[in-house]
Length: 98
Image 1 (cartoon, one colour):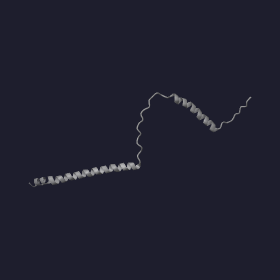
Image 2 (cartoon, helix red, strand yellow):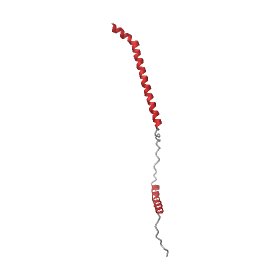
Image 3 (cartoon, rainbow, N blue to C red):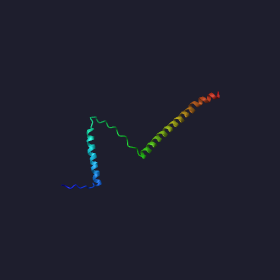
Image 4 (cartoon, rainbow, N blue to C red):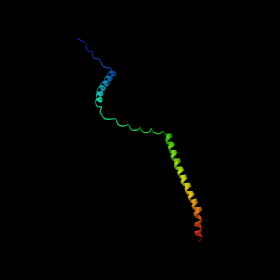
């Protein structure tokens, strides 16, 4: 008769056998769950997060736009007041003197 040897299995061999066993069990399960569903349209990828330099440049651009808007409004106000003083000031002055 043949002699049966009882040897301890090395740890690496036992882990590799265990990994193969789980792969054999999991593989057929994934193959059986294939469905007839159509693929969904891929969503457009979101923009990559902006770098600090890009954020800083955007802040600067917004600041400049606000500043130029305020300057234009001040200039317009000065022009309107100037028009009132030049055109309307004479009429008011003449009414007050009467």
